Image (tube, rainbow, N blue to C red; front, side):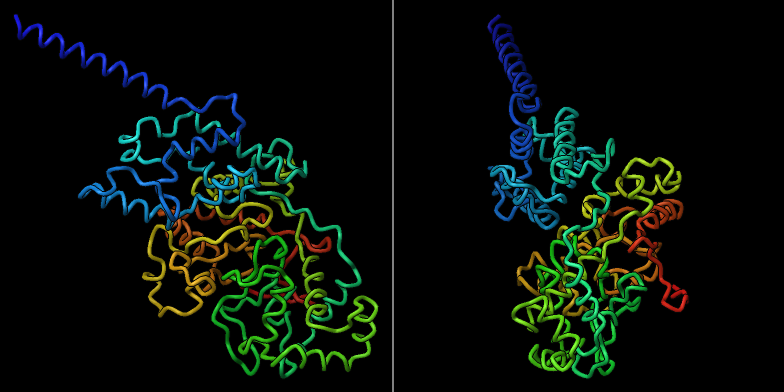
Amino acid sequence: MKNLKRRQKIWIALLAIAVVLAVVYRITLSPPSDELPTEARVTEMLEDGGCLSCHTANPDLPFYATWPVAGDLVQKDAAEGYRAYDITPLYEALKSGATPNPVDVAKVEKVAIDRRMPEAKYYLMHWGSQMTEAKADIFVEWARAYRTAYYGDGLTGDREGEPIRPIVSPTDIDERKARLGFDLYHDTRLSVDNTISCASCHGLNTGGVDNHQYSDGVEGRMGGVNAPTVYNAVYNFVQFWDGRARTLAEQAAGPPLNPVEMASTSFDEIIAKLSEDKHYVEEFAALYPEGITEATITNAIEEFERTLTTPNSQFDKWLRGDNEALTAEELNGYALFKEHNCATCHVGINLGGESYELMGLRRHYFEDRGLELTEEDNGRYKQTQDERDRHRFKVPGLRNIELTWPYYHDGTRLTMEEAVRDMARYQSDVELTDGEIADIVAFLRTLTGEHNGVKLSNVNEYGVVHEH
């Protein structure tokens, strides 16, 4: 009889615990109160979802992180999480009321849509942290509202939630400075031996690049990184693959003094040569009280480069509501582009240029490449000396991508098909079929836009096509 009563008490206790746990589980699974502002709800879910336990330099590790075996797994997950994505800037922006980076918004939104984070091994130990449909809906609603407010152009109508935006060219161009910048951009006197101009490596008739793996500098010297396009560079948050220039003017100041590219010894040398040209003396005097200086030279080039935008691509027309602008194949390519996480880095107006990302996120790109590592392969690490930045590069924009071969910072992929296949493999750990690659490439071809009302192409002034 005593044993029976004892078993009954145990069962009652277990039932009570189960009820309590069920209530707690139900509560913790519930999304934050809808009385909170959207940003506050997102912040709360980032905290409760375990994001700060992995995706930050100083993770908030759980109590069992010091245990044998389990602790090793926790430490490994935290290191890999931070390597892949640092959520701290997004979290701090939300807490302070600042505007988040569009890449951060796209990444969190995609994780919510896929409901792939946190992983089961985390939420089984942290009840209620998993991504529910209700929580995912909040993230998606927040991302859409963010894009509507952040861009505020009213151009995309019911496509407002898309991570890519149509080009809206700058309207505050100083036309006279831009014309002066055009002349300087094409002037070989910026180089030590008067043979190389900006246009030598960034040809306006060849997609803003030179279609070489590495560009030729003075005396046949060769650079060590693929020349990025100058078209739409105004939309990049920094310039160069390693982000060493914050503005177009800073970027313009680099190549003239680079010993491999233009190799001038100083801007004084360049100024002396330009000062012998009556046209330049008069134009600079009219536009800049200080005359010809390093700052005024680079400012004029920057003003010209701000005009190098390419609006009105097929895809821009679709974004603006033209349902006939894209074929079924192209639309499927865009759907695949988003499905396989391409649109978590290639976002915004330029489909890139908004963040630094690791080359070889899911597989070891540099090990598989087989070539000796170079200083340029270090990427952002060259500037920061932070080990996390090794092999991390500014994401290239994909506008006019069909014209800007070869691809990647090392120029090792000659075709879009190669580039797409390997991006999926190394960045998303996905093996695409030939049909999927064809559709994605078809979509990428819709990103070629117009400059001064003419669709961009690799045709020179003599009407000769620059063949791939």
